[in-house]
Length: 209
Image (cartoon, rainbow, N blue to C red):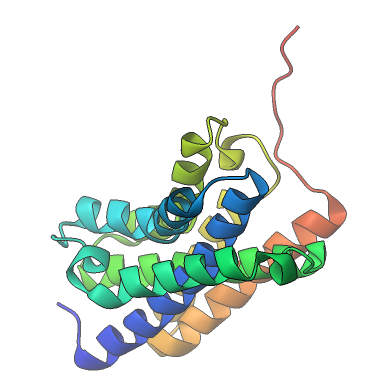
């Protein structure tokens, strides 16, 4: 079970990631001209679906985002803010949006990995849980919009989350404190994601004849 200190750290990282991904989900909804309800649904799903999947898989039920009202409140606050101030937010430069997305991915990947480790999951499974936490919300968002999930066809994204989780676990094995290991993994995930967008890296794919 989690200690009080790790519980507080996990909550802070989780809520920050929730806010960032809720903003992204709501901005995507605005771009697709969804109504207020659609914006709220997409912000909620993008922000919380990955964490729900993670908690269900590791047996942390009911999922934290459904037990603790602060998760839903954070997601809906971000969604409402985007809806009412979208004229300003949609003028944010694209590089900043990419940076926010990379930050959200890093936060969620580290939170997912940390929680899986706290629940005594094997490190390999913890890496998978961190990756699912990071990409689950975006996958659900794309499904709601009737798109092939971008994580399955775009540039380095899930790979960045996975790499960050591996670095975090390696840091823990090397004797770093949980906070320092999480920070190191988060930086690795963020850096890989940003560099992959900048250099237009992508994983190999098979082209249909």
